[in-house]
Amino acid sequence: MSIKVGVIGAGGMLRYHAEGFRKAGATLAAVADPAPGAAERAAKQWDIPSAYDSVDAMLAEADLDAVSIIVPNKFHMPLAIQCLEAGKHVFSEKPPALNAAEVEEMIAAADKAGKKLMFNFNNRARPESRAMAAYIADGTVGKINSAQAKWARRTGIPGFGGWFTSKALSGGGPLIDLLHMIDLSLYFMGYPEPAYVMGQTFHDFITDKNFKGPWGIPDRADGTTDVEAAAHGFVTFKTGQTLSLQVSWAEMIHREEASVVFQGTGAGGKVERLFAVDGIDETAIDTCELYVQENGRSVNRTIVCEPCEDMGRSDSAANFIDAITGKAEPLNTPDQSLKLMKIIDAIYESAATGKPVAV
Image 1: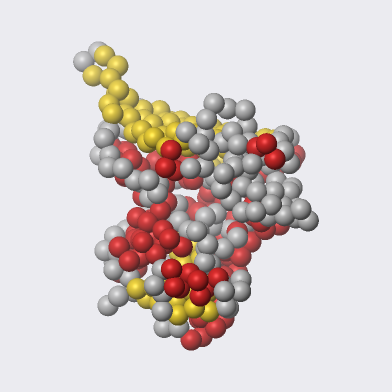
Image 2 (image 1 turned 45 degrees about the horizontal axis):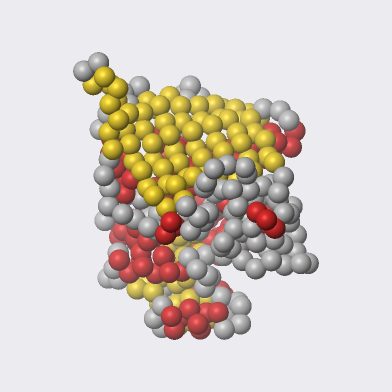
């Protein structure tokens, strides 16, 4: 039996959700978006039979097993809970919610409904990440003592005054928007329990239109821009492991880089994407390397992976369907999302107070 999926939100990410769901054998049954005409245009473009201008109408009228959520961050939690309470599995865009407290509410709703709750941490589905995860699983890497997570842009502010730059709608700036490499680091490390967090945010350039990226949403002159432009932090874990992080939309760096570098007891490694143009995947080069000692020599192994321009976005969506049908283990769990958001919350708290934060 094909899983029937409804999508909330007719934005650009719908393309990848549609490709992934269909790749896994699911059916896109409906799309809902309150913007006038948006759902109808998306339904026509992606061959979806039913379009709605409200989520309530879609849940009431469409025959659905699952719902995909592609909306601004503020609405992830209320929509996920509404869909879970309606008896649907939920796949939501990242971040999971505005903060950890909201994730706890989502987990409670999923547990009560007995339904899957997953998030689009698509970088776990990249060929490079899967290859590295295999080396970690087979013991080659050993215990990862430390890792460095980085997603830094030089000119990547996604519009001024829109929902991305409004803390009330987004929860924060690049720290919460570009949390993928933090998640991927934690995934490689086994998602250990955090102990203490130190962080600092920087607001330089956040209103400077010279630092606007080539993607995002149109500027709004009457909108709000009250989020950080960059964040740096350090996390210690109860296991003795450590993580340092750098995320930015606007920072004086050479070029955009999304990477995880780690140091294990058996081997070190790197998964990296370097961009020629900030925010444009078509200009990027992917690298996957393993660092080992063999026969008294330092050896760097290049791991050759198939190209994946979309950074695992469609495969992440496919995994959601395969997890529902029991064909695959879920690539992420709600408990992991809760740990991640606790770390994000603690970085913001540390930046505000100037003190380390116990998690």
